[in-house]
Image (cartoon, rainbow, N blue to C red; front, side, top):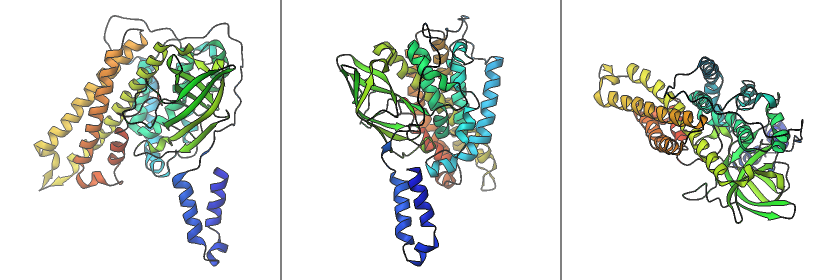
Length: 431
């Protein structure tokens, strides 16, 4: 597809077609190709193979339970957050508008993001990473910091770590040996956790994608929606209804026969280059089943994904607050700043209050998750707050800017569109 579009683009700019009066038809063809995309075979640029033999799966240990609810970042966490925040401000924020318009991250941005080593934090030292214990809180802080730069690009950056995190937590020794070495190298593969489907009132625990047993393993059929970086991804973790057992997770390489990709631009998250993942009679080996198909594994993946979206919502909501405060203080009407009006001041205060509540609930859930404590209630609360209050904060940001909130000159309209995704998205990120 890339070569085809490149050729068409060069053709559209040539003087020959201009003299022939064909410029407009060719430009329309280029526009249609870019807008509608092409359904193509998945990327096949890498062959995953074991770099070492593992006697048993490598896992991260739960963090120590201090008995205190203290969310003060440690020195290491603070250093990581400061580094990621700086990266988001210098790299993601300036590139966000262009990525939103072009439906893809600028060239080189994601490779620079990979150099931060975000995937390394969640991979044990014996597998080449730097992790020693579960770091759900750290992952939440990183997601929040990235989303402060841009939510769509944050999802694109975090998509590979969702797959590596799942492999560390639930993969067997062979799966870890086959796939994790690629995530600690210099060329981290594009990968995605694909749970979402285009279904009204979609329930991740009832996927329409089907998996059935075969003499050699499994066969998958279905369509996954809003998969980040779908066209570039080399590895997917896909949810499917396994006959007789319920929802389960499968490792699917983009090179598998029957895997095709279709672009799927959405209202928001456009910088994440979302697409559809078509699975048509995809044959998988028996070893492709992740976590043994256990129901509790699938449930935890859904919960940690929802927690990730709550952290992303907090980061983008913080971006809205940081943008509207100076705006309402500097914008004048009737000879004084609009922030002097009670309605404006109260609206800004409401954003700050709801944001603080969302962050506390999400971080509490993350703290309990990494300590191995029950956290289902806290995740449910964080999900509800993120879906409701996140969209409310985005809407309030647009309203506070008045007419400026409706135009692309200011980023608040993009943040509003991105925040609407929080209530519908499943998968894609994992803490």
